[in-house]
Length: 217
Ligand code: SAM
Image (cartoon, rainbow, N blue to C red):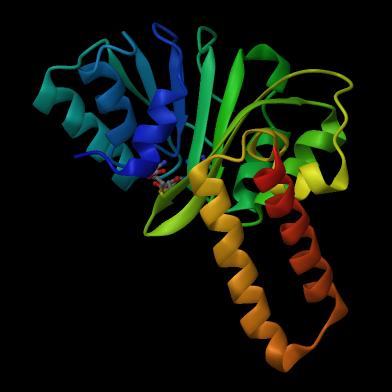
């Protein structure tokens, strides 16, 4: 069964798009997209030969010839011209930044990115470029994962609080995001018993303000 994290990513993809999954590893997401009829064609990109061989095995095991297409590529450098939607998941922010810096974001309909680290830096990067965040999700799957969907735009602006927590997370305040904020607050309170730092107190005040706003609206 596909993990909750990858299932939530799949749900953010519109039907019949040509998807390129960067760093596909076992091609679990592409196989799910084909099996569920969400996509007719998916590229599984890999920089490493071992995972790329696993993608090739999946093609022959499931009879996905011409539908699941393995691509040996550093990020999107060798992505075919017909790709529409890009998924980059399960990597750290600096690998994701390297991929985004070298790809021509304007060529694609949208990106769905799940960074394992520094999601605030990912949103800062998106904001500095002026790109537009069009959807977000927080998923609890042993850890809290944040998924950010964005597209090319020239001048979208975000406040520092939106960059830190996510503009759509803040406007929706869905259950998992509220749970995430409450857990973050408890963790920071615990750390700050010993650390006693203003930066932690400031973050706790920010989280309280978001939670109070949620209760009042
Ligand atoms: N995307 C899957 C997921 O979210 O479960 C697999 C994530 S796996 C931890 C990371 C994969 O990304 C590895 O298979 C690695 O070889 C690949 N990778 C790392 N840097 C890459 C790059 N610059 N271009 C393509 N693939 C890359």
